[in-house]
Length: 433
Image (cartoon, rainbow, N blue to C red; front, side, top):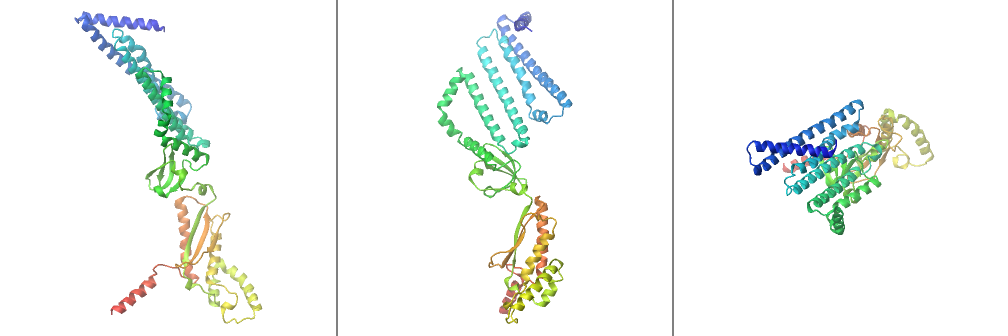
């Protein structure tokens, strides 16, 4: 339709309304004000109606398309209300075209109305673009190749730049100055702006460093003891990294902290062939002894080490025959110890477990003695890396270890031990008596 014809129809309608008001007995001086009120009310009703129709029409088209093609992309756009905000643009444009005609006879009011409409359109466009950015962030994070990239930081940065641009446009509209002049002023204030946006700039630099060095990704399990964080990364943006802890609390950590401080990322474990068990039991040194024949006979009944004893015993006896020493002292020749056989037993026990990954390092080793006894450390990896399942496997292994210690006539260190406490209490009672 020709725009001039549209304006002509609107002018005829305004004249017709004016005639009705005058015929109703209203003076011509007051009729202008009454006409203005009526036209503004009618325009408001039309704007609301057009807004409702445009949103419904756009959503109907989108739903029709979505029914024909299942699209997660469209679902995200609908969730972020992209089409709803898009629908607001149509009534805004209609108002911009129509309102000056309503105010034809009020030239002093027209410039202010024009400014109000332009400000409204800027705000509507900004809201639409910000919603689009949020939807874009979700869509990009669904792409595998971008999951480890600082998408949220880039989106947040563009959002900030859009807001700054929007503020400059609003200032330009209110002041009547061209936009390029405001950009010149902003350039002159760059040092002040750099100071004001220092944290944002540092956060952006940290996000780039995190991405380029692959320090952190969404979904990573991290521990950051300084901030009491232990859980999964849910969001990485310019200023903060959000972590959902295992107790369902949330921790927010400055993005820069991940480039300047130490934290633990469990991704390497999750991507490897197993999760590590590294734990020691402490053996009382006084319980470690050479094995006599009675002890060897007893230990031979333990299936896992029967073959080992049968294989090693002739070798030891042959070696001792060659030694022309006093055999009344066991220190004079080679012999088994209960701790040595216990270590062999634990190694073979780990070999027998289907839940332990034999392709990765697994060893039972003796650490340096301490004031709490002699540490015997079990070092291995479980196939199952899920926390709860891993803890079950680890607990099963050490339940067995704690029970097997006594069969090798060894004692575990406890501080204080129940035996020592009982003796001490008995001695105190004797003193009191």
